[in-house]
Image (cartoon, rainbow, N blue to C red):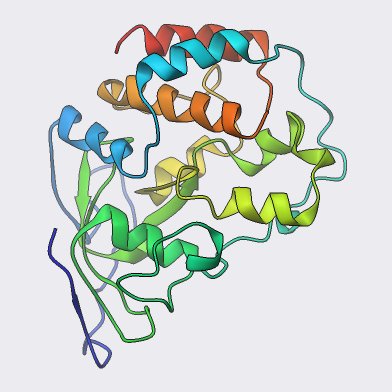
Length: 230
């Protein structure tokens, strides 16, 4: 991927159309194959599907805790990227959201303060390609609510901040698909792109293992099924 810095904001804004069932959003410039889209999930990945299959057998299985007391703000997110596990280069001014956009995009440009990102992004969960960062959400692969209900409710603020800004946890995705996912685990929501099942489940399990989060029985069944596609 090629990157360069902009010293000033780009003139002109990209007009966004209202999402409808028929035409694509204004910033969706095309589609890619399911395998090309799924490959986006390799960015920032720290292990393999074999690691995930082994790790899944070791994860504690039990029901979720109550969501009582949960608030997204208990996981301070979009903090300084280099403080929370992201590379200093190419711009030490990035927060975790913009660092993920930079990592996951192609031909990304930005201002000297790591704002006004321009480029193209491929959504791993569907198959769309976009040329506006405003249509890209940064998904917590294991959502903050799921993490809360499977162990993070006992964490201190530092650990929650580490989690919420971790490069392994964050993936750039289509905003509508991220919103449809919400806090649901793989027994309740899977990417529409079936080619992404292997890498999505791999990333999910590696995150749960890294942070000592448990899984439910239905979640484990779904993960085993998805990992079987690897």
